[in-house]
Length: 327
Ligand SMILES: *[C@@H]1O[C@H](CO)[C@@H](O)[C@H](O)[C@H]1NC(C)=O
Ligand SMILES: *[C@@H]1O[C@H](CO)[C@@H](O)[C@H](O)[C@H]1NC(C)=O
Ligand SMILES: *[C@@H]1O[C@H](CO)[C@@H](O)[C@H](O)[C@H]1NC(C)=O
Ligand SMILES: *[C@@H]1O[C@H](CO)[C@@H](O)[C@H](O)[C@H]1NC(C)=O
Ligand SMILES: *[C@@H]1O[C@H](CO)[C@@H](O)[C@H](O)[C@H]1NC(C)=O
Image (cartoon, rainbow, N blue to C red; front, side):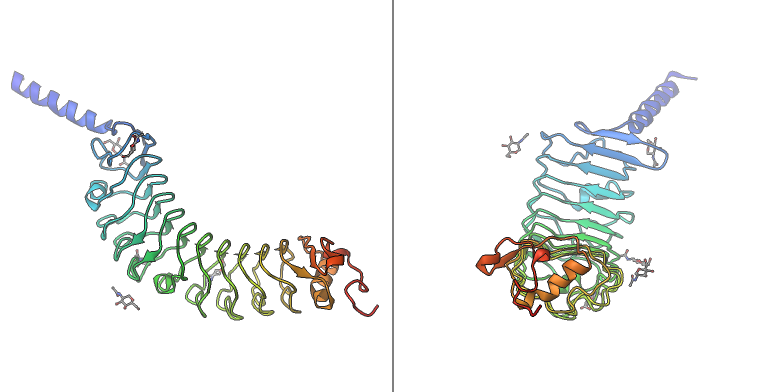
């Protein structure tokens, strides 16, 4: 063998093996037969760690760094990507067509960034199933942010600045099972807003400013198991709103403005209902709730707020006389 050939071979070996073990600075890489996972947790990181990023990366995590820019060019270099975790960075915008060419990407987590709006097409081009956008500053979402045939099952928009229920934006998500809209500024739920989501199982609407529920709000959501409505401004609940939900396991109505419940409201398949921190008014109208609490042993222990002489009494311990009912 001549020296030229030897040299060429040596270069090839170095190239191949450096590539095999390549990993960006400030990151750690884990190679296995089926996955290549890259984790970049360094607060000093302020640019996308493209240098040395293995071309076959399947999972990329960049967390709690100074990263503020992400482009589709960054991501097209890793076309086998399945999961992208970017919590706690400084991203304030995302380009349209961010996910071009990512035919395997099913999960994105952008928790705790500085996103304000989501432009048209931003999550097109990838077969997403899980999308987490929790704790950003999102107040505006383009109606065409997701493709019409999206198969998203888990969507988390909690902790943002949504003033209106994003009905047009969610309309095409017929596979949705888990929807988080907690900690926004929602005041109203438009009529029929969950009708497009027959697969819905867990609905998180807590910590908004919701004042009322439509009697048919959940009438198409047969698979609902958990409904979180605590910390809203509900003054009443339509008596039939939870009826017919055969899989229901948990309803949280605590910390609202409820004074009594109409007969029928809790004629449901579960006794795991949270009712505390409401201004319960313990007169004759509280009888239905009192019956439920005493006879079906609901797990919650709500107390009276009024009248004054019954303040802080546990409702289940009231006597008929105290409620002003004939004995
Ligand atoms: C990714 O590339 C590295 C280095 O070439 C290799 O060791 C690993 O098996 C590859 N992983 C996959 C999932 O293809
Ligand atoms: C992150 O960026 C900010 C502003 O650009 C800078 O002040 C800070 O030092 C950076 N943090 C680190 C850990 O590099
Ligand atoms: C949703 O799933 C269907 C059936 O598996 C598939 O044809 C379609 O391409 C998927 N949609 C997206 C956006 O990946
Ligand atoms: C998606 O659906 C909306 C409303 O149904 C429609 O206006 C739009 O043209 C559709 N987009 C595509 C790409 O099919
Ligand atoms: C409701 O759940 C059942 C059992 O998991 C499932 O077979 C059914 O497809 C679900 N319904 C919808 C509309 O997704």
